[in-house]
Image (tube, rainbow, N blue to C red; front, side, top):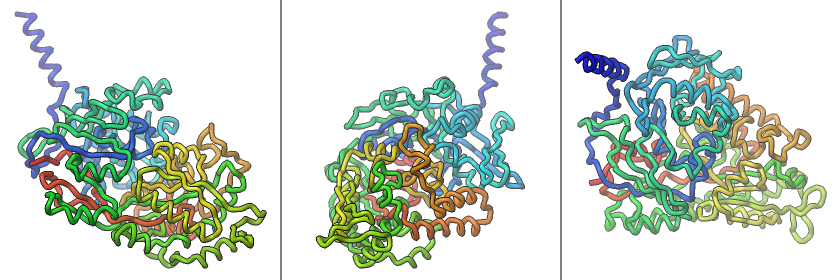
Length: 574
């Protein structure tokens, strides 16, 4: 009897150590559990390690298995509770407090604790060697990281030397990683090699799904996370779908055919494909949607640090880059390729963002081969009698342009660039290659020119890893120390004054408490890009989607801010 009493006391004491689960309740959701959702992505992932993923083929699938402290609302703003149930700033704006949920679990059943949050930031995010992008997004305008303190069992604080207005996004949107799984590999320096695509069955997260199978070139299979921390108004644990099949497809034409065959539930068509789908929608039982300009962008960029010293000088030449802006007939492209469902882009911020500065349109980079030739002339270029464009040293202008094979929009943009360049006497060798190879060439600075895209946001501050000098995707002009194995030396590197100012703007905006001050900083940033064109932006397609009418979702419509899979855990099938 004594032993039984002792056992009961121990069990009661143990139970007191674990708080009742503080699930997030979606009161208005009332879906039907079960079924499989069929989606798709272009190409295979390169890694399943979030902190070392630099390509959407890797980051998109990870979005299903990872969880963040704060989640985005329908406007793309950080306002919805996630792993955190509450958050606030100190009166002086220097300290950001986060209070997490108690009693919830990782996808492997281990308890989620404040220690996971503290470790994710202090041991991973804040250590430059532990992420591909470094720690720049967490630095304040004095280039200081926050002091992190555990306030109590559920509350953590981040204190900067000046107010950090980007804390909601940078802290709130950072996926929290499982300390109990990753602590050892982070400590011994092997974290970059962990959670490769071969480790798909070892991934642990706080998202709605877990990966149960991966077949290269075929699909990734996800199943519902049995420990997910959200429930609907009836107490049903989310997500509603039992399974998610993520088909790995080679190109957009294949994905279109798979959708039309009923093998995919939701599709984000190109503007060229959309009219055809809209005509078929009523007969097929599809729902279509058209939004404003997408937040992402397609662009061509030239490598300031090309391994070829002659081409390097061309790409650094302001007149050379401006010539390509004038040589691109955006309006004609929008009508022919986009079916009128797009907008020209002259800078890095989408017109759908509240930070968009319409003043950049005063540069009026309208299509004009004459003006393009004038820019080349101002840049020191000339023409031989046969029309060949040459630089000041008589070198014929010729370079290679890359993009990812199978992306019909990017391939079309490349062909238009080739045609426009030919009218200027410039030979462009277009070479479509595998997406992951494009990204590798981009990140190790071994390309000459490339057409690719960036995912966007309503807040341009999220692009710090592209526009700051220490950003992991500052691809047009990586500094000499960005990678110890690269070819970029101090002797060959140049840093224009306008690029220094862009870097300064991205540091200052983190502490711009007055919304107008922050808007003004990003307005100046856009003007600098419009003037110097280090990245030649092309067009923004309207946000387009089509899905089967048996798919039900918590929001009335999808938008550029929500993206295609907003609150997927609340989707279900009739």
